[in-house]
Structures are given as C-alpha cells and as structure tokens.
Image 1: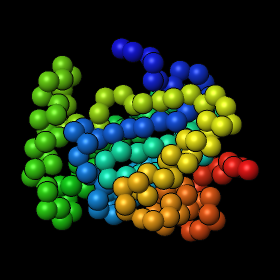
Image 2: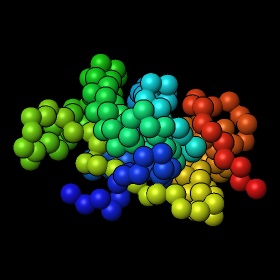
Image 3: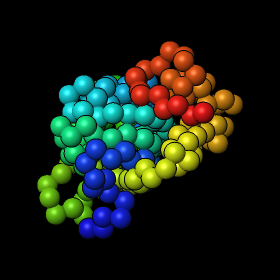
Length: 184
C-alpha cells in the first residue's frame, strides 16, 4: 500500500480528507452530520485528536489536525471510520430516509470485492493526508477547507456554514471546538 498520502509522523499536523464510497451524499440529514461531529468530539476527548480546522460536506470530510501521541493519527482515523460507518448504517436503518434501500444496497455492494467479512462499506479505503510544511501552507489549507461550502454554492460566506470551523474562526456558535490558528 502506498504511503504517499498517509500520516506517518507522530505529533505532526496533517490536512486529511476522507470520502464516502462512490461520493454518495450521506451527510444531508442532521442526524448523519451529528454522528460525525459527536465522533470527532470523542476523538478529541479520548484519543488526543487536536483539530485546527474542519469542514463536513455531503460526501467528504476535511480536517486539519494532529494526534498528541496517545494514539497515532492512523489509529484515530481507522477507529473513527470504523465507528462512524456502523453508526451511519444504524442511522440510515432506524430513521426516516427516503434513500434507505438504495444507500444500504450501494454500501452492501461496495464491500462484495473485499476479502475480509464486512456487511457495509461507507468510507473509501484509507484517507488522503498531506503533511504541514509551512505557515503559508497552513493558511492555504484552512482557507481551502473553509471555502468548500462557498465553492459548492451552499453558502455565500464560509462562516454561514454550520458544519465548518469557519464559525470558530469568526467567533460564532459552533458544534465542535477547534484550536484556532492565528491567520495574520
């Protein structure tokens, strides 16, 4: 397996993207978004995940983060994806969802080729991680993260999108605490 886009250095900050299989728009319901937010909170409190910026879109999550050494970022991402996959499937099965049958069928077919036993596959394998290497890069990535919903025409200003740390940077109410990076 390639290590080109993996978080290998302990205590190093990374820009990470994780994506649903087939880019399926899973996070269109509030309950699905809250699965991700609550899971990130758990990773912060119990696994030592430090988040500097994030944005949850309908089919992917961007996070600028690092692990404090309690667990590696690879371990945190593995556990996060495993737990949220199960919770997402449970939510699809138990709550009103007009796309229930289609989504469950798609996630079931997405793991047919796997050698390990698995009923549903929600996330694409692995994750895309880019190591932080300069202050300029940090600003570019945070801006990229925060501009995601603006580019998708969901909002006109980054801080108007509730599931983004742009709200933290604008000192507005937000669902998830982050370490705000000075952008001056």
